[in-house]
Image (tube, rainbow, N blue to C red):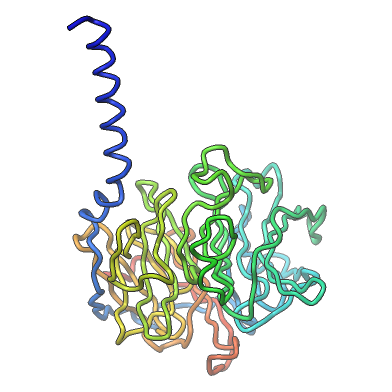
Length: 368
């Protein structure tokens, strides 16, 4: 056999191996995290050690910390509140609050100290049609200036609007969108609905996105929380159908997460099942999520709990804290070894309590 023939054979073998690894990537992940119904155990956190740092908010949806230590909190009705030194309230124009729409996710630019840019995901009403969009503005003292559109035309409805926005370790902006109550849009990679999107910071399409557009993963029903673990893997929580089956998913580039074709632990070739799912007899109604101290933490609306997922366990284990102590929980972030959690009892589905809605401060040292 000539050297040329040997060289060609090696090239063919390398290409074949690469194709095999690519086509079996999801199968390899599934063997590490096999789809399973969660068995939630109850953990204990003393409410005597949970502090309230803000009260009388109206459906807080997302929390971001400024370098100064002040908190920015989005209220679904369209107010962006700065909690800390100034107590400033910024009104975002043209926000349309619905059952699950309004001013939702907020994110700071990775180089905020230089850019001063804040990103806002919100529902609006243009020419009688609901739509979701992302704008960015510069936070200049007591003003939000230089408002610019980053993304518009995301399908919207009264429910299923997604709404989380976060900058990833790669500096790209990741966005969760719901199916806007049109289930099959989730399976259309050209639609912005039912997706996790990936954008450059100016809203353009990154060159390495899998479909040549903003779609990063698809087949999602209503994802509302995303976070990256210490290995840089992207995780998401999303609402299942009314029969339960809420999901924790490990997100992979270009993967199809099955909605509406499969739910829960159902499987189908070419579709990714969740790492954990609630089963038909339990409902988390998962909202926002953060990663801290080697664990994922997400809040539950109907579940009225804080959920902790130990992803280092095989299979991952899940514990429930603060069950029904504070009602519906939505916003969450980690800052300085502390979880900050927002209640959501004034969202039209909860029972408001004195001082609602609140931001709670929960030290990570309290967890098992």
